Length: 277
Length: 308
Image 1 (cartoon, rainbow over the protein chains, first blue to last red):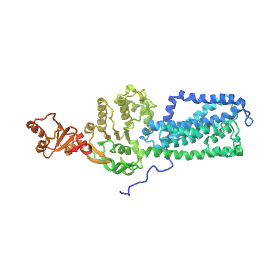
Image 2 (image 1 turned 45 degrees about the vertical axis):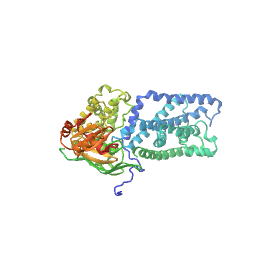
Image 3 (image 1 turned 90 degrees about the horizontal axis):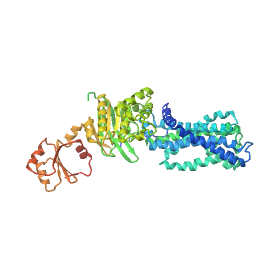
Image 4 (image 1 turned 90 degrees about the vertical axis):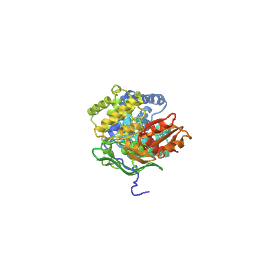
């Protein structure tokens, strides 16, 4: 046993080194998306319409105004936020896993000058892009329904991109750890589905006890996207935990930035470990 | 070899997966323009070695350099001059045949027009022109292997890594692949080839490295290895215990191997030695054949064979 030339594992935790080649991976996914664009658009167009009809008009008729606005106006920004979450999360769990595990697409790419880190980063940026596309479609739908109250709605694509990057990065951690594709049932049902309902989406968080409000603010990423979306689309936010809107928005933005940076780095490292051993 | 420029060099190269050592302190050199075959049974460490060459797997320890570039530090540079045809089919099922090549070329920063030009050249050579716009799923196994080979050449590599390039190919496609290897050798492309087909290795490779259990157990030119380990000719007869003493008496220096109900007798004596023996003794089901690389392979790595 010679110990002189035993190096430390090169897969140790590090800040990923990325170049413009990240966009080549993004571009690959974009090309596939464009090829199947009709199939891609339909669900993201239909879903918000169904939500608006069922919850907004159907259920909304039985519900009194929330904060002085009709129920349908209350849920419209949340639909944008949900599109961000679903778009990025499913792209970087099921989508990335299929490319990695079944199609061996990553294996093919890393034989070229593109690095493993860049492949994963490209996937994350693509997940964020899917979130942006989906959110923009929902935005158009709610605009057609006349549910936009603030010119700040133009910021939605930007918010969707960064919120999408956050969900993509979280999703990619699950992908790095997934032994098989069925594994994604766990994060879908234990993480995404509860968030869908408990992040101030379909009812105000302020109607919950403050411990629940604090939990939603502390650990549910969707809450923060809902907060910001409501701020820029409806022009006001809930007073969660008694915070005034001037405070809530910066808190939510800071939360998203920190969590995104954290999971962006962690997910790339976990994937690198999985792919290079 | 006309030039003796070392293009690939490994020292004490080791790869461990948890407590399994797939590649165990191997040393080798490959010279520019050479075609070197890595042979070995499944699990010998061939593919792991190849994967370390294109930075797919980082070595656990040791040195590995390609064109003077270290796989520990200069992966990007290495990967830009290396072409890889992996064992596993990893074509992009989301794209057509042509798009597979152009998207792959994009990873190498090859401009769009140039990429399309090179893609068309390769598709023509590998007789895939009619499949240009066909999705990958509609290709046969042989066509997929050819497309993987074609894809490995897009960046006009100095070093080509072919991991079992002809597995699953019909003879026609196999000869097409061989022709391309010979073509590339003429262009001074350095080629690393792993294969289970000994005839392929004998025909294509200037030099052979035989691996077993993570180590290189023998290396040399195909013909030299055959002469060194086997000799000129092999006599094959039905196994018969009564015959054994006669044969051993006639060929005291020969090596006897039993393979099921057949027996092989290897001798390093020159041609014709068995013929004389057969004139005096009548036997059934006798074959005299030229010794080949497969004999070497089985002698060095073979299990289940028994020295009598």
